[in-house]
Image (tube, rainbow, N blue to C red; front, side):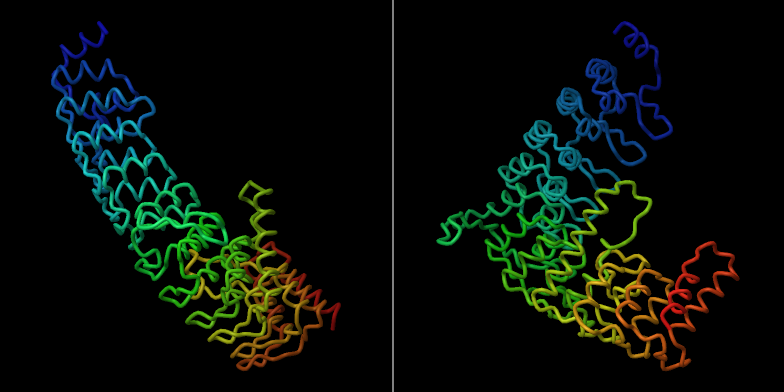
Length: 441
């Protein structure tokens, strides 16, 4: 303490920032050094000075593991509880991100704006829902937070809670309305009311049920269904929650939606059914470098079961989209990127497991798209050797021509091999494709 007093007393530039714009008070508050922060404040340190990101010492005290006393100190010495960073984050936003329950109460009691919005439109309630802080959600709701306020992309806090799979937060937000609480004769559970229409879509037409199906938490999905969520609602591209569950390989959600009456052959605006999305699901991607092999295997199995469940419940592999692609094409090829932007893109891999299941289900191995390209043609064009092997084993023809060049799958496999040699690519995939053809023809 003596050293601190001497330093402060002889320091003319107490608010001198470092490279990141942080003053000594920023650092003391972030580190939870309440005694040092007190000395700095007593000697005139600016409690509202922002760093380069616009964060004040109060923002950092709100997130710090040991910053509770520092936060009280700053509030008691005139810190602005509603000052926003460059991204529009208030100290209450920061407390909500990290689940700082006590500090959020102090901020609210001292005038913190409960529905302050950041540059994305998110309130502290949105943030608490996204990060799964149920206790903080209760505090915010008790103090009048608006559960129907729209945030990023026009989403409610409930969208974010179910998207990230926090069922306790979902239950809390659904009970916010207190409009009714009846006992279902079937489930003997209380039906929850959110106080707003949970079928209200965001800016992209996605309801909370779409978000839950994408997130994969079946408890959230069931809570929404029991609260009146419409499983046939479509987004702006005509996709239902089942499309979202299938695209993400969410097996349990797929089972739940199908059991609740979702239509398995419902096409979106591009003609893609849930089976198309399941066949091209990103969960089938061969991830050699992600590190968590057990998780990858579990996701592959779940996605496979999802596809299988759709087929077992009447999904039609022969249905084609507006470009003439069936689910079999999608499994053989990399997927139509325009149709799959919903899930931030799908990788350029052949989904041989999905393909094998689809081709075992029905004789669609020689289906051709509008350009005359067969499933085998597409698989060979992309150099997906395992897909080629599966198709050949199911009797796919090597001699079907496309409409433009009159090329067969053998031609495109040869071109892929030639291109690999020109570019000196080390992969032997095109060579393996050629060998597969030679052994079968």
